[in-house]
Image (cartoon, rainbow, N blue to C red; front, side):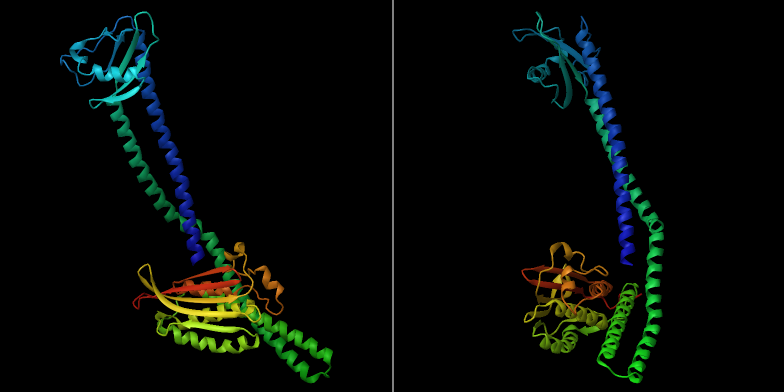
Length: 411
């Protein structure tokens, strides 16, 4: 059932989204706290170094150590550097000095990363403290990569769990929908018998009662309402069958021939309403599909077009074939002139019992709003799509049916 699939998909997406946002916030918080703690420790060490009256340099045996740790130097007003050890800072000091004098607090030189801080200028000059934090940076990068990989794994796990539990989550809704469908189907079947009895009684009453214009009008009104109820029952049963999920038997069908046969029944109705019926049909569009479902879709769309076409207007039926996403498809279009359907109504025209406001204004054309819902269900049962467009006094319904494989398993 397509509605249940949509509910399961929506549950999975929402669960995945909530879980992803929660984990992103958690992992992001862990990284931010770690980063800020590391930077705070480094800044505290730099401040401590600046406050020292004498500077202690790293005790290293290598004249150019691989990691400086923390060090400081003094720059006087003339730009001279003092209170440093040139034995290992000389190769790096020009680059470091250029960055710190340009007010860079974080910089990279010779493949190493530094964080700098300066003291207020005094009579001796400006003292700079510099910390080489390449090791801490690598640690933070490793943490970021680890958290990122963990996040992706957790998202995948949450997605799988959401898919697994989605069936149980929507089970109450599925049961309610199935009970509703069973109720509609059972009620429709049960109503057929009393309606048939009422129709028979009215027929006998018409034969045995004295004829009068008023009495005949009453009987005619009663029979008209019975016909209307029978039509509603037929539509409800048809919709129930279409939404049952059972795949109809398929054969190779020449859609052009099937469409021409369906059009013959509407030529008289078009003539009576003074409507022009125009066709543009490809002669050889053969599809492996269910002919009965296709004919029902055509009849529904033609009936809908005749209801809402303006007197003296035009109904145009087209059938062609094309490749869509590398798949052979048949494309059926039914267009009628008349009033434009409001844009806000277009997305609802295929819903059950939904009627556009204009349908209430046309005497004799009022319907229950089930025809297009049936057409959509039949189209989807054939693996196709149906859409509606309306602009500039023309309304067009388009049905796209893809070619089915003969060896496709059928339910």
